[in-house]
Image (cartoon, rainbow, N blue to C red; front, side, top):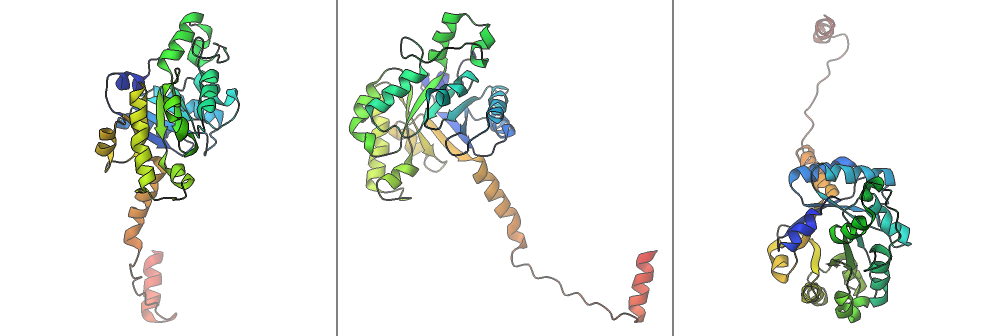
Length: 278
């Protein structure tokens, strides 16, 4: 089983870069990998990637030794494990709402002894049955990461207990939905949001888990200082939108040059038509 680049770097105390893709195009994953990102985040919660497209994204990321993270939709165990069986390097489960919710996710996504994830072994992650059965279970638990996303105020009461659970790798703070959950949508400097972002990182590290969040070049150092080792910066749609906006700027406010059309039948008109016809 291909070893996870993300886990290798995190376990070595390094900072991991991640790039989010919204476009259903495997070449985005390949380009991000060529650009040097450690991880590409594909989203099935909001984008609803077709399974064949997702398979292409996984292959494209692997071609550059880049990890592919899939944020899964909330659903049955099949929704959670299919990306892993396709050999995505990790999954992120959104909107963890409490301790029991977190326990159920771990139970469904980890093999024995950490959980009871349904076993197949005939897919890409098990080398299509070419891997030894027990090695497959062991390596999947060691080299595939599970992320629990904290993006609501409800699980904060259980945060310590969630962080202490065995069988997952990272707590990921999502500021967007959290701001809405506290009644302050888009207020990134809201005291409750800032306090929770710090707390998630502190609690994760206290219990031996990694901490992840979204950010940008402007606040990367601040996030790292808080204890975040995994930071997702930017997205394909952001880059493409801004690029198009910059390209179209010169067209704005440019006056259309005056065009004088000679009257039909005038000498200059006839000369122009004759010349253009030659």
